[in-house]
Length: 408
Image (cartoon, rainbow, N blue to C red; front, side, top):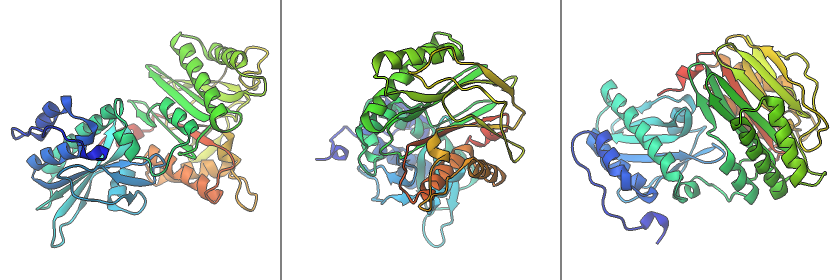
């Protein structure tokens, strides 16, 4: 039997409130019964069917979570389906009955990170009250999905449309949530190739009133690059949690890489710190592309920051640079695999194209994580689907109001 046919005690459904009922049943709920439990408790909302859909690693498809009592479904594309529209727009989508059952699609959010969609099949058109109840149910389902990921491989395996390389396995295990939002800031990141990423990674931490960010590009590919990146992320977090300033964190990372890896292995990185109250952005540049700022629909370059040598090769303390952001500014940290992506004709993707995509997404009202998803899709298409180098990017938005749009 496969993992989804494991025999478990039936989920107890009692009372009229699906939220309380599912919450009570969740304490001993295995990941393999998540789809079944959701379907059983969604019936208390009047749903004749309920299906949990999870986004794959590359965020190209939505994959149904199977289970006893869950109707059979096949994966859907995020860019070409009603379910995908709810995921992209981070808002519920109603499908009219049109002679058959009605459908309600609700995004699954872990905080501000999109992880999938909840589908409810109803006999009648949902009203606003039912939609609000469905939003609450979807919030609990998202939390249950994330918590089951912490101690089970079942949902992780389900989300993989193809095998991950060992290097990618290491990198995905290190990443924070792809999206975070608070009262004044939104952070969202993306990386490609999702199933074969090697030396590129990013990290962040929100410690009010500042947020810390790091984008790193370890030299080389595959497992050696992933191991170096893993050590660098560990050193970054250790230095950050020890209260070091940015040059001090860079020095700690440099020491670890120089001490544990041969001289031919090093990493470039940008380390930044944003005071979300004042908008002061500080950073150190360790042989890495400079941060970009998108302001009022245009690309703005921060003051020139003398770059230090790459991590593992440094000979002195990195210089701390700073700039004052304005409300609504978007800061972009990225690896060179983004702007140096080449088309089959040899044309670079470039900084201007990068900024233009972010500006157009803003004008179209796209949510920040959707901007990143589409941007990385553009990078992949620019190279005809074949990346010559890993590519990762983090977008930080300060006081744009976009943080409120990420709530369902």
